[in-house]
Image (tube, rainbow, N blue to C red):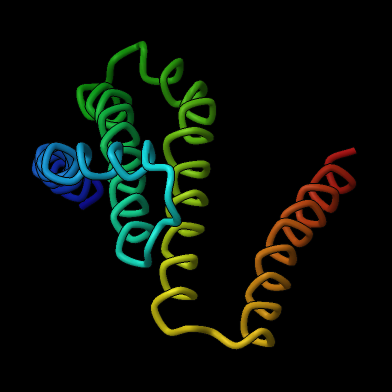
Length: 146
């Protein structure tokens, strides 16, 4: 059953990569032009930038992980090398692009609904807390390992 799931995942990886590329092709130029503008960015602009960054991350994440999972399926001796080094690829493509895209979407929301000062403060606290909990999580893991 695991082999079927691997094949299904690899099958879905191809349209994910292609469709992510289409989104980047369609929205990327607009996102770049927004980034070059010298005036305040509107809610829709933040949303477009977030969508583009999110799909750039998804494109590269799926492109990379197609390699080790394909190697795993064919039982290649090179599988472990790609699996082991995948963490280095996750940082920019998955975590950083995801965080930046989320920031853009949150900024878009704040502008779109005209959040109150209290709502903005709560969102900032939640954002900061996510990094604090991330740090706490790795400190606990480091403690448990050592």
